[in-house]
Image 1 (cartoon, one colour):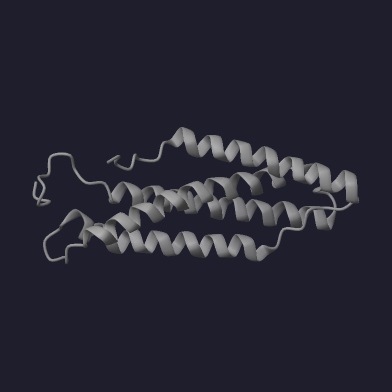
Image 2: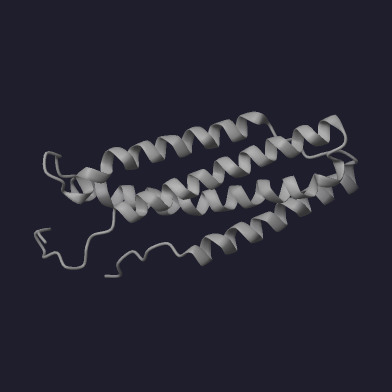
Amino acid sequence: MNAMQPTRTRLLIAIGVIAAALGWGTVQIVAAWFGRLVPVPWLAGAALVLVAGALAYWTYQARPRLQGRPGSKPMEGIVAARSAALAMAASRIGALVSGFYAGIAVGMIGNIATPSGAQTFWAATVAAVGALALVVAAVWLEHSCRIPLDRDDDGRA
């Protein structure tokens, strides 16, 4: 049976760079074919910030349980495994979304002098930062879910 491998920073950067190229390309294609700007709602950034906050809160609450600190109720193995899987998925999706919105923001720099261009630039920037916060929270949760290598089968150190 193959154990889950920790998320590598290189993977997240590669996903982000590829997604940024796609975001920038989307801006160029939409502008050339349709003569308009890519719409980016402010709610995208707000939703990403809320999800990042929720994941960070879960990590903050779960960390003592995962570490087996005195006075905390130990977390069941299946909950810890699901938390780790959630963290891995969230880090990859966060990198994808952050890169895409960053690419849109970079593509909008030439139109920042117009009101709609500035609105799209700032909405995309907020969304990219919110998604980056999601990546940070997810990597923190994943790191918290790691089991020390010196533990025996019963989970004791």
